[in-house]
Structures are given as structure tokens and as C-alpha cells.
Length: 302
Image (cartoon, rainbow, N blue to C red; front, top):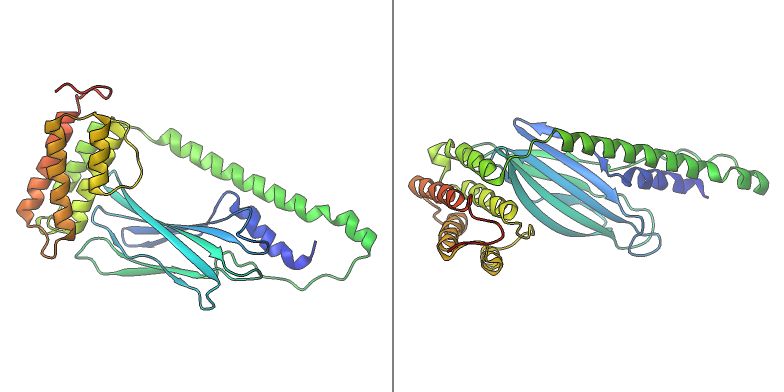
């Protein structure tokens, strides 16, 4: 094994469990970045890396897509993003799949993201630089072939120990989180989230972020209540999925369609919604939860 490869292998071992970089906090918003390196890249000598960026703030959180500083164009980026509202906190997640275009040494791009904790808040910015960069020491004196063969297993043993330790730490952390999480029935969770959104300032109820948070609550409620597919879907696709399952009555489907179309109009129309329309949207959401909370998940009575 060449000594110049040891830093890369150390990075690879750490990435088996995902290397989480130090989180950064701005006011009530927290940003986290995790780096995963795949076991095999697109070609020999080229890496495949997954960056997972999460920003968590209030229910009206706004986040701009992350920017990558890649001055030599060494990486090809493929992105996907989604949001999730839990206990009044909105988490925006963007996954960035980086494929190295040419074999050889290539530094990972720096990552920068801008966000604000609501339409009236000031924009904040945070950045991670020198991702997983490991300093390279001067190579040691050349060893004889016999000595080199006798010690060639040592770096691999050290890397395996590091990987196992990190994997055990991540497994233990996830287990503690699962055991401490108290699950509520879907309807109780949804009603609690709607109450929190109702307490939002009236001037914010007309914003696109407010209506996005409302629709996310209803989508998650229906997904968990009726075991619907949890993949990211447009309004038309989601309504089609609900209709195909037959879990909701025609009246309930009409109510859902009215609610989602109102939210889409507020999110994408140039003028936006009024505070009164925001109040009506949350009332529709509450009515939908109340009318479907007692609906049997296996069969709907018309």
C-alpha cells in the first residue's frame, strides 16, 4: 500500500457510518452537514460522495438551495430536496450526489447555504470548507520488501477498528433516539401541528411558507393514517394516489382537493393569499383530519 493513499482510506472508513460535520446555529435555526463516501465510485480512482444538508427552524423557515464551490469542475452534482414538519419545527433537507468526473486526487467542494426563520427575518448564511480534508505527512523511509510485507496489514487493521467504532456509535445514537421518541396517533399529531400553525402571526398566514407547512401536515397525516406511499409527489399525483387506494370517500376526497388547491394557489400565485384565506385553509385542514380520524383504514363507508 502506498502511504499517499492512507488519508483517503481514513476518510472512507469514517464515511461508512456517515461523517457529520460540526453543526452551525444562527438564532433559532440549526444547520447540519453529513458526508458519505461510497465503497465504489463511477470508475477506478474516482469517488462517489453523498452530501446530506439539513436546516431546522420554525414552521415558516425559508432555505435557498446550497451552493458548491468547485473551481476546477471536478464533480458532477445531482440534487434532491424535501421538507418535514415535526412538533412545530420545519426541517429542510437537500441531498447532493457528487460524482467525480476524472480519476485522481480531487478536493470536495465547499458547501454554503442561506436561510431565514420566516419571511420577516433577516437572511443568515453558513458554510463548510475543506470537507474531510486530512493533512498529509511526509512519507516514511522506504522499507525493504520483506519488512513492507510484514507490516502491510497494520493500516487495514487500524481502519477497520475505526470503522467499527464509528458504526457502533451511530447505531447506539439512533437506538437512543428511537427509544426516546414518543409516537402519537396520526390525528392527534396533526391536530397539535395545526394548533401551532394557527398561533402564527396573522401577517404570516398569507405566506407561501405557511401554506407549505399546512399542506405538509395534511400530507404526512394521510400518509401515516392510511399507509399511503411516502414518496414526494405533486398535488395531482397525491390526489390520484388517494383516489386509487379507495381509503377516502368521495366527499373526503373533494375536501382534500379543495384544501390542496388552495395551498398551491397561495404558494405559486404572484399575489399570494390573504390572512383570511390562510384562516380558511387551516380550518379546512382541521375539518379533513376530524372527518377522516374515525375512517377505517382498510375500508371506507360511503
